[in-house]
Amino acid sequence: MKKAFPGSFVTLEGPEGAGKTTQVKLLAKELDSLGIKHVVTRDPGGTPLGRKIRRILLSNENTVVPMAELLLYQADRAQHVEELIRPSLEDGCIVLCDRYTDSTVAYQGYGRNIDLALIDQLNQMSTGGLRPDLTILFDIESGDGLSRLHPGGHDRMEKEAIDFHHRVRGGYHKLAEAEPQRWRILDASKALSVVQDEFRRILVESLGKKHPLAPLLKDS
Ligand code: T5A
Image 1: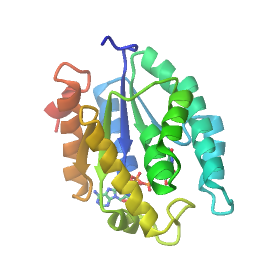
Image 2: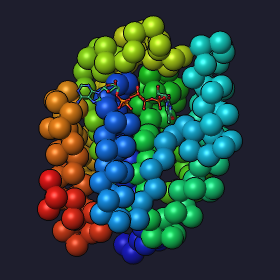
Image 3: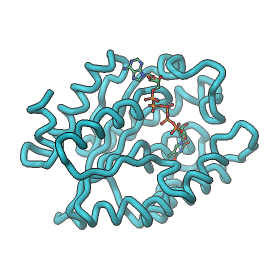
Image 4: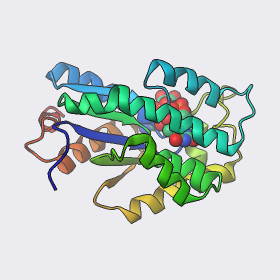
C-alpha cells in the first residue's frame, strides 16, 4: 500500500525507566551532526497544550479516575497529531515519538483494565488513524526499570503498585506478538552504549539501507 506521507514515523515504547528518553536524545545529537531532518517529541507533552495536560496527568497532587486519565491522554494526542506529528510527516521529517497509542493500550488497557476495544476506538479517533511505521519496545523487567528512576521523585504513574507495572509490560509483549511486522524488541537492560548500538541497528535494518537514517550505521 502506498504511504500517505513522505516522512517516517517511529515510536519508542516500554515500561518506566527503560531508557527511551536517554536514547532518543543521543540519537537526535547524531542526526543533527549528520544533517538528517527529524523531529523528536513525546506523548504526553509534545505541544504547549499537551505540556499542560502532562502536568495534570503526572502530578501527585491530582486524583484522576481511570476514564478521565484515558481521555486526557487522548486529548493530548489529538492535539499532538494535528499540531506537530502529521505536519512534520507531510514535510518529509523522520518523527521519533517517545510513547504513542501503544502506551494507552499497555497502561490504560492492560494496566487499568479498561476495555481494549474502547481504547482502540479512541486511539483511532485521536490520531485520525495515523499509525507508526516502526515501533521499538525498549524492554526491561519492571522492577529494574523503576529502580533506575530517581528515588523519591516518582510521578503519579510511576508510583503505581508493581503489579500494575507487570501488567503494563505483559501488555507490551502481547502487542508486539500480535503485530510483529511493526514491532522490534530491544533488550534495554544492557549497558547504555550497547542499547545505543542496537537502537541504530534496528532503525536502519527495519527502515532499509536506502532510508535517510542509513548513515547511522556507517558512523557507529
Ligand atoms: N502513559 C503515557 C500512559 O499511561 N498512557 C499513555 O497513553 C501515555 C502516552 C509518561 C507517563 O505516562 C504514561 C506512561 C508514563 O508513566 P514519562 O515521564 O514520559 O511519563 O514516562 P517515561 O517515558 O516512562 O519516562 P521515564 O523517564 O520513566 O523512562 P525512560 O524515558 O524510558 O527512561 P530514561 O531515559 O529517562 O532513563 C531513566 C534513568 O535510567 C538511566 C538514565 O540515565 C535515567 O537516570 N538509564 C540507564 N541506566 C543504566 N543502563 C542503561 N542502559 C540506561 N539507560 C538509561
